[in-house]
Image (tube, rainbow, N blue to C red; front, side, top):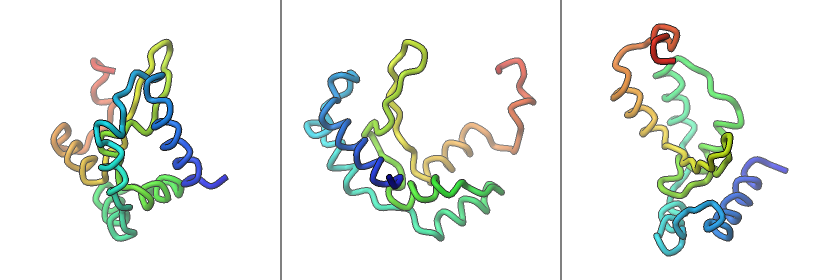
Length: 117
């Protein structure tokens, strides 16, 4: 099964089972409407992101972001970590960039912050 087909199954699952994950109703809260309006990132956007951060994104990451450039408030990735249920949202490439610039204004490795990790 292709990645995007799997994502579409997850979208459907979230809309049908949101209560099981203690999530807000995505239709009632209009998260689904907002999500459906999200377009994919262009190849140029993805390339610019890679150049800006000096990275090469994995093929499946690019495929996902060509489909949807983020998920806004729709919790597209519900998961269980330990005993905690945790919903995750996908940030757009621009939000990732803004967040990185806000919290890390210089290039650094996490190993430089051993007191925190």
